[in-house]
Length: 471
Ligand SMILES: [Zn+2]
Image 1 (cartoon, rainbow, N blue to C red):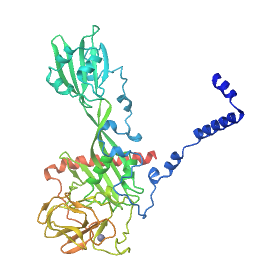
Image 2: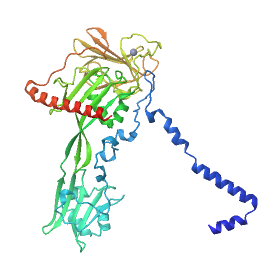
Image 3: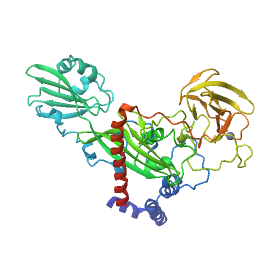
Image 4: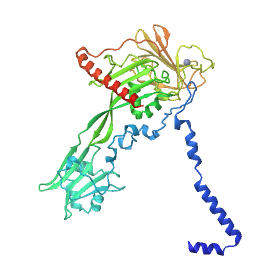
C-alpha cells in the first residue's frame, strides 16, 4: 500500500484527480443495487399474479414460481429441492463429511479401522482409485474376482463414492459402494478371504398431507402447496375423468390430498403414491381413494375411470388462466358453437377421449386435418385443425392414445383444437354432459374398501381442520 501512495504522489496533479474520480465511480457502482434483482421482482411469474378472465399466452410453458425448470424432468430425488413446508426434519443427514464417514446401521458389525471415502474422478478406473487409496494391483485383482463387485465396480462413474477401510498395516479390510440410495455393495476381506454382500436398507413409508385453494392456476397452487410436477400431474390424472383441468378450473377451487413419502434411515428417498384426495371444482366435490389393486375409487367405491376423459388435451399445455368466455377464433365474437376450443401451442399432443374406432382421418379446407372417433352406437368425438394425424381411418384406439397434434390447419386464425362430443347424433357440451356411471368396486372387496375409504377420508378431513386451526 505504501508503494502505491508513493507512486501516486509522483504523478502530476491532473492524473491524481482523475484517479481519485475513477476510484469513487467504481465504489458507487459496486455499492449500487443491481437492476436485475429489482426487475426480477416485478415479473409476473415471480409472484404468480394473473388476472382472471384475461388471456395470457402460455405456449407449452409451465408456471413454476418456486421450482426450477430443470425439476420438471428430474426424477432423481437427490437433485430435487424439497419445499420448506414439507422438508423432513432430518434432511441434514444427507450431507456427510468426506473424510469422516458415519457407519451405517447395516454395517455396524464391520470393523472400523482406517476408514476413508474416495470419490471417483473423471477418467478414473478402479485401479487408479485403489492406487490413490494406497492399495495394490493385487487388491484390484482380488476384489474383481467377486462377481457382483466385478459387475458394479468396473463401471464406476465420476462422482460415485467408495468407502475403503484399511487395517493399521494398510491391508484392505472392507469396501462399500452405494448402488443406489438404499442398496450397498459390501466387500469384506476377513479370515476367509474376500466375500461380498448386498445390503438393502428398510424403506419406511410416511404419509403426508397437502392442500391448496386455487387462486389463478392449478399448477401454481400445486407448486405452492409443495407438490412436485409429477404429483401435480398425478392429481390431474386421478380426477381427469371428472374435471376438465384445461378449462373448468376456477378461482376458489380446492384440493387436499394424502400421499406417501419413502424414507430410509430418516433420509427422504422419493414420493410414493397419492393415497387419498379430494377436489372441489366449481362447488362440486370429487373424492378418490387408492385401493390395494392400484386403482382409485370415489369414497363410495365407484371407479374413477370412466368411458371418456373430460379433456382431450393435458391442462399443462393449455393457457392456464381462466377464460370461461371463449372468443370464436375466426369471427372474434362470443358465440355458441358446437364444440369446445382448446388454445395451446402447435404440436401439443391430442388424446382420444375414450376407446373406439377411427371412422375418419382426413383433410379438408374447413376442418384442416381432422379425426373422428366412434366409441359405440351412442358416442362419437371429433378433433379438428390438427397439424399431424397419428391414426388412420378404420384403426382402433385406446383411451388416452395420442391421435394427432394440435395445429392451425383449416379455417382458423390461430392454433387450437376444436373438439366435438356427439351423443346420438346431437352435439353436446363435453364439459358438462352427464356420462354413464362407472363400474363400482367388486362386491367382495366392498366391505374392505369402505373401511379404508372411511379412514382415509377422516384423516383428510382431520388434516384440513388442523390446517384451518393453524391459520
Ligand atoms: Zn371451435
